[in-house]
Amino acid sequence: MINLYNAQIESLSIHRVGNKSRNEGIFLSEEPYVLNDEMNALLKEYFLKSFREKEENYYQFVHDTDLEFHDLCEVVSTVFTDPSTIHAQSKKIAQLLFNEGKHPHIKSGELYVVYFENALLDNEKVDAIGIFKSELKHDFLQFEEKAANLEAVLQQGVNLNKLDKGALIFNKDKEQGYKILSVDSNRYDTKYWLEEFLAVDVFADENFNTKSYLKFCQNFAKDVVLPAEDKQQEVMFMNRAVNHFAKNDNFEESTFLNEVLDNPELIPEFKHYKTEKAPKYKIEDLTEFPVSNTAVSAARKKIKSVISLDTNVQIKMDFINPDSAEKFIEKGWDEERQMYYYLVYFNKEEKN
Image (tube, rainbow, N blue to C red):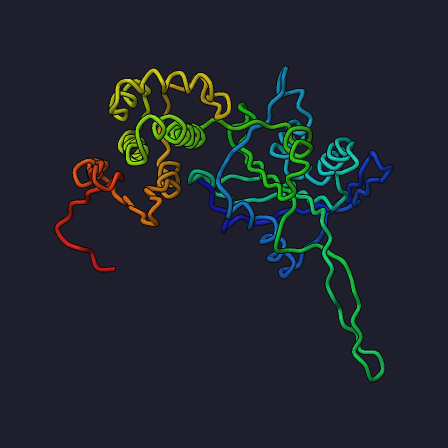
């Protein structure tokens, strides 16, 4: 979990990186940018706002041979070892980004390399390196007084409300390739940013594993449980799954299957589905792992415990105890009407 409220900008370097394939150049600033208090506050919000608003999906630097051959990782390690080198190293970062601008669709833009202190990661105070790129220019009006008239002047600039691309590299888990967050608002060139420049892969910690496994379960419920049984059983399966994660500090797959899958015939279906779909969720060999309570809470909010009927009626099963659906909701078939029905038991109506 991250907290960036107290993070402070200690150094900022700004360069301009063109598109190599269009013969655009690269402009490297000779000195770091000197911030006043107003600009410091504005840029800090511009750089970090997107990271506060997105899910914490961490990445890590990866290399086929060894991380010592990962150029950006080596630059980052140098800076964390000696933060005073960040401006010189920021020029190398700009050059690395410029070298990856080989596709004509990649936009030129300003590159900002920032050294942050006092970021909070998993309740530990750490430094971080921010690499941000502004690409899209937006029209805005300036007004000038000329004689007796006020004239509008059309100009272009960077919209400080939305970051185009960014990465936060935390000084944490160096041996595994650091913990990294990435933002990319312009999805058309994600490969250029994530795979070619940053050269990262997902950081498979307990947060990622818990989130991925629950997402996999959600799709299993939709693709297998729903067709084999019904919507009620799909909802009940997911509620049992989430509650199982919520009450256990460690996940163990065989225990999970025995406790969560009421129908034993679905266990082989689950294992077959996992063999087919696991690579998509990066859970191929995942059978035991620590549970992230943060990921469980986030998953619970996203799971829809609603049965929508073709008669424009919805039944919302908002419960912590999954047995509620079994005890108080019954499904049946009405021969006279030739329609299914749900019978709902209750003591009193709750006041909204």
